[in-house]
Structures are given as C-alpha cells and as structure tokens.
Length: 404
Image (cartoon, rainbow, N blue to C red):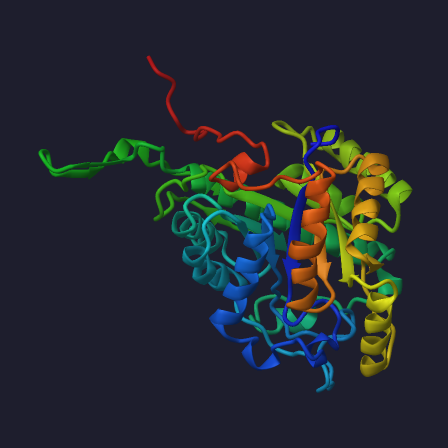
C-alpha cells in the first residue's frame, strides 16, 4: 500500500509483446506463440523475479491495428491467441508462487461459466488465481453470438449521449456479472464438503445456497457446481481509462490498473478512483491502484530507444498505446517507478514488456535486482496466496451462519 516500503510489481503478457512488430525481433519466438511451453517459460521467468502476479490478455475478437475499426487485412502483425483462462490453468501446475490473472470477457459470457472457471483455476493454482473482467463493445464480436446488435464505435463518438449510454450499460452489465460470480463463489460454505465415509455423506447440503440473483440482463439461481475457492474470493482486477470504468472498479474489483502519462497525472487519476469509491459507497478494503507502463529496457543507454525505433520502422508507424512508453536502462526505470509512486500515491505497477521474452527478462534480471538493492522490492515470496500477497484478508462466505 502507499507509504509502505515494498513496491508491488506485476507484468502483463500479450503474444510476442506489446509492440505489434515484436514478433520480428531476433530474440522473439513467433513459432511458439501458440504452444504451452512458450507461456510456461514466460510465467517461470516472471516467477523467478518474484513478481506479484502476471496477467494474460484476451478478447472475443481477433487483434486489429484500430480497435474502433474492427478486423483488418494486415498480415504483418500477430493475429490469433489462445484462451487466457485455459492458459493460466496450464501454467498453474508449472509454477508455485506467482499470481495468475487471466482476462475473460463479461459481455456475451455466462457468469455461471466464469465463476466455475476462475474457481477451478484457484484450485489448480492452490490459491493464486485472479480474474480481469473485460467488456466487449465491438459489433463484430457481438456478431459471433447473434443475440445482440451493437453500434459501430469511433473515438470521436465516445462523448455522444447514445454511445455513452451504451458503454454505461456494458459496464453495468459487467458489474452484475462480477456480483453474480462473487455470489456463486460464496454459495458453498467453506466446510460444505465433509467426506464422512462413516455416514456416507460427502457434502452437507445445508451449506450449499441458492443465490437467487435477478437483474436487468440475466437471472441466476445457483448454487455453483464448484466448492468455494481456496482464497474464498479470487482477486478481481480491472483496467480503467475514465469515470465509468473507475466506478466499475470501485463496485466490483480489488485492483484497478490505470494509465497515467506522468506522476502528476497518476495523482489526479488516483484521486478520481478514490472519489469513485465514495460515490459507489464501496465497502471493504480500498482499491489497490497499479499504473500500467509499456517498457523497452536495455543496459546500454540509448539502446532501448533505438530498438523501439527499429520496431516502429518495421511496423510502419510509431507505437500507439494507451499507456506511457518507457525506453531506457533498468536504473532509469527504477528511478521513474520511485518518482511516480511517491508523487502519485500508487500501490504498484503493471509493466507491459514491449518485446517478449527480451523485455520480461530485463524486468526480472535487470530492474528487480536494482529495486532490491534500494530496499524497494522483496527478495522472495513470503505468502502462499495471491490475496495474502496483496494484503487482502480472506473473507468469510456471506452465507455462512454465525455460531450459535
């Protein structure tokens, strides 16, 4: 938390890296992007750096150079991806301590299925699971399901009242999805599974509960088919770029990723997040706020900037991203993180490696040792669950009866 000495640090994994031309780097492994071994290697590298957690990107549509325009005909960028939740489940038994937070889309996806998937991930990871809910506003993605029609969005239309209402509905639906998922995680009390061979009772049926949720977009009776996860409530993280996503995070999440351009900007956004917590009457621990930053790192001064320029030339355009872009040495990045955290009131950072696996190794083997020498980052893992590492208590099931 802000004010403590330990910095929280996570990494966001996506394909060959966050630069669209990263797959053409000499150190890239484009022939392995759709293999379990590639992702397992990335996860083990991140765990070797004792990072808090890793996130895995996902969506319901194929990647595109323009998120508002829909699918394109480019063949010089990575297209296609593996399912993030299934990838996390494959990685889980190959790692021991790092948290695993896959992205899963709330729009078009049944909350019952999301609940069991993330609960199962928490079991196979022994309490290291999280989930990043994501909305889908694309009419192309809606066409995969044929149940709803969405308007075509453009950046200049986001302030239009009809568009704003549509986006508010998507985030309102997402908040209901998270609420249902959380209710289903609680629908089995912790001691519902008794495995009493003498009486032949495997479960105590009185400790399984209907949630009986009825909302605008769906109704779910429950209970879940999966017993309560080891963490009780796996960690929920969300990405926010403005007031509506901040309000969603305040209602539904444990962590929010923000995208400031500078330390003063981070301070402004954190203030907006705290205001959203008040407006939504958030209960429980305050949101942990992580700043997202796209990073290109090299030991030699100027080398990272030159590498990014070379990738920009290969792609035919300067990297376009929703985050600030860092190019520099591990020491320079350590300075920046310290400055931003001190001035912006941040809990930590989620770094997006410009090229994988190169910039991930620069984080774990270059940045992390420098942070440790400054006393700003831990030397190992002390906690076994992701909630504990983030300072979040394990909540009791809301359906648990108080002792007589």
